[in-house]
Amino acid sequence: MNGSALTPSGGDASGPSEGDKPATGPGALARRVMRACDRAVLATALRPDTAGGEAGWPYPSLVMVALDHDATPLILISTLADHTKNVLADARVGLLFDGTVGLDEPLTGPRVSVLGRAVRSDEPRHRARYLARHPSATMFAGFADFAIYRVAVESAHLVAGFGRIHWIKPDDLLFTSSASHSLANVEGDIVAHMNQDHADAVRLYAQALLGLAGSDWRMIGLDPEGCDLRRGGVVARVNFERIARDAESARAELVRLVHKARRQLEDGAEAAAAPPE
Image 1 (tube, rainbow, N blue to C red):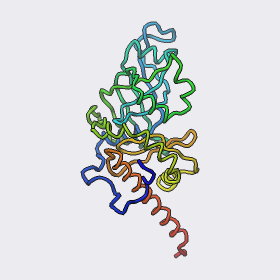
Image 2 (image 1 turned 120 degrees about the horizontal axis):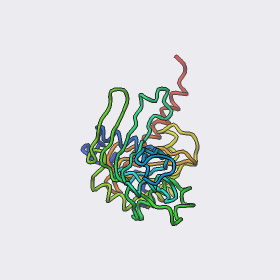
Image 3 (image 1 turned 90 degrees about the vertical axis):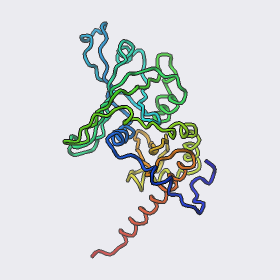
Image 4 (image 1 turned 90 degrees about the horizontal axis):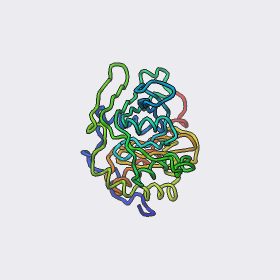
């Protein structure tokens, strides 16, 4: 993206065509829940030589997560940890993504259970994407006992509230499009450009679109379906209204979000200034 990436050029900056609107089915909803989470509960099977329990019993633990562009979960784990030792003995794992935080009635909110196999990944892009989401992990990610594992999804289970329950196949959960590959190649440049040259736009996304406080928000990731923001220990998700298939369509979506944020601020100011009825 060049220095004028968020400056409207006079043409239509609304993004790709109508056919590029994001999907709305259970798989898409599950991805939205997963992409908004920075942590999950990891379930592994206790290995035979575990001192604290019988082999095969489920062992839950907390892990910090990131997602690849196609929504494949990424975790950073150490061979010193019991869950990693379990994975090395039996790669089958479960991940619970909780989208109910802050709800008065949590059971009315969405959550996603992902079943798959944890496989070590030495792909530099996976490492970079994880550390961008969790910068504090940089302090120990280089230790010899730590490695990135990707969870190869075999199925998922979405509970989106009472009576809204779906088993989801991998092809429906994952964003399997060429967009996830082409955009991944330029993600780092776009994110760096936004933080360096358009920090005001990133702040607008957080404040006007998401209603979040604070001015020092940074963009930490971008994929075909949206972008991720961080301020201190808080992460936030901004979803696109059109699929971003390359750098240009990502630019169009980012411009559209700026326009939308400014309109919302203007509407709010007008409402505040209006005399009471």
